Image (cartoon, rainbow, N blue to C red; front, side, top):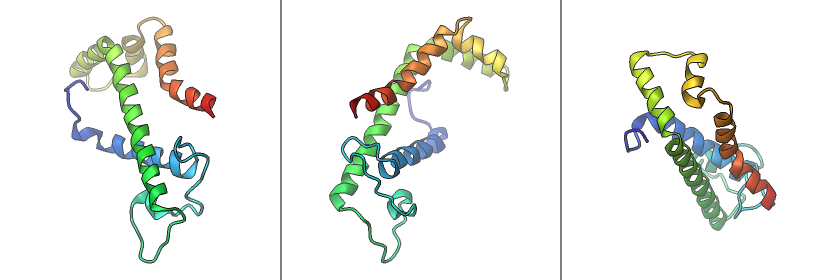
Amino acid sequence: MALGEIASGAENDLKEATRLARRMVIEWGMGEMTGLVAYDLDGENAFLDQRALEGQSRMYSEAAAERMDAEVEGLLELAHRQAYTILTEHRMPLEQLEQVLLQEEMLKRDQVLPIIFGTSVVGLSSILWKLSFHCRKRSANR
């Protein structure tokens, strides 16, 4: 976000976010379109790690697989929008942290927290509330 583009350094974050979103939808039944269904009953679904094995059959239709993909993409898009909003709203602390990191390669927790949250814990509460908002909203809708 700071550079205005997605950099290659985000590759691992994107992979981990995708794995988590897939597990949410396929294993834990947290998809809005797919509902309370666990599609990965044996824990070794080829769909999850995208390595189709010869002769392995799925226990769901192509239409269900398309819904799963749409759910995963939707979760990732929502997470991206939320992260972008939070970082935009808190742009000043992000830039301050950037400046300090340019001067010092490594910072300790007690150096970072005052930059991010100022002297108030209210900022921390606000950020945590925004991050958990989607989870609370989804729980209320079920």
